[in-house]
Image 1 (cartoon, rainbow, N blue to C red):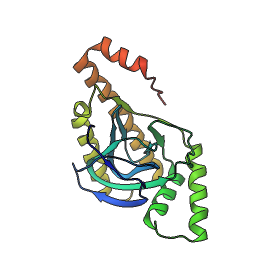
Image 2: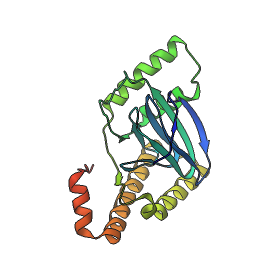
Image 3: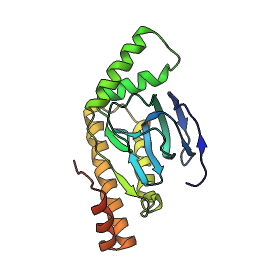
Length: 215
């Protein structure tokens, strides 16, 4: 990412990102939580790509150059946090589990970003508490692998997410189960494509240098 924008303040807002669209490389002086309530989000940095379906969010530390890519129509929610606020204690990107409560907190907080009321301050405090308790479950693709390898898988997963959104309401428990299953399928597909592309020994060497936890 040789060229990028510097946007000092990380915005807090919600927005729609069209299928296949991207937000170009940029960095903030703030930390940021990036969450896609619908669609599949890929956040790319100089170190690789972090992938998050609707039951995951991406933590982007202050100063990290990153770009967003939408696989399917993306309902994007952004939460900016000052450098002094680091509820996760992390200085590198990570993927976080988003349970039902954390999801609703992110949606509520990003839909009224200009509200400076005491109620919003309480909402923010609960949001930070939930972030501190959120398990880290990263799906990280090293830069050498590249997001192109898993593009067909991402598109298929995005189509499934979009189709589900057009149908009847899905119970939260079933949606979380389906999201988790899709998340595992994506992880497996990325691993197989990576091995096919670079060879097993190179793949093992890459991941030996960057441990990945399986949940």
